[in-house]
Length: 116
Image (cartoon, rainbow, N blue to C red):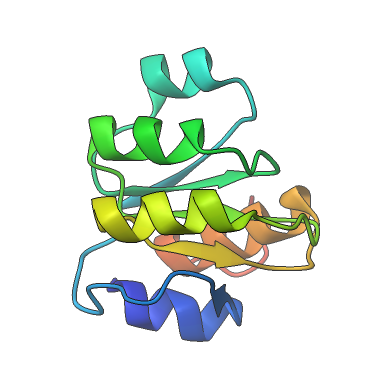
C-alpha cells in the first residue's frame, strides 16, 4: 500500500509540507518507548505514537520508516515538523486513539475484516 492510500483510508492529516505519495507501507508498529521502537520496528513500517518531540524523526529516519502517525490529537511542535521535512519523514495526525488507529491499520494492511 502507498502512503497516499494509507492517508486516505485512515483519514490522516499531513503535518509536514510533503510526502512521497508512492512510498510503500509494509506494516505498522506502535510504541512510545523510543529504544523499543529502535529495536523492533522495521523499514517501511509506519509508526503510531503519542510522542511528538524531535527524537521521533531521528528514530524514523534511522530505521527507514515510511512515516509517523501521531495519534490521540497530540500536537506536534514546529521544530519537529521542520526536522521531519528536512529528513523527508512524513508526520500524520489523527484524533483517534492509538488502539483504534492500530486496529484500522491492521485490517487495511492485512485485508482482514474485523479480525485483529
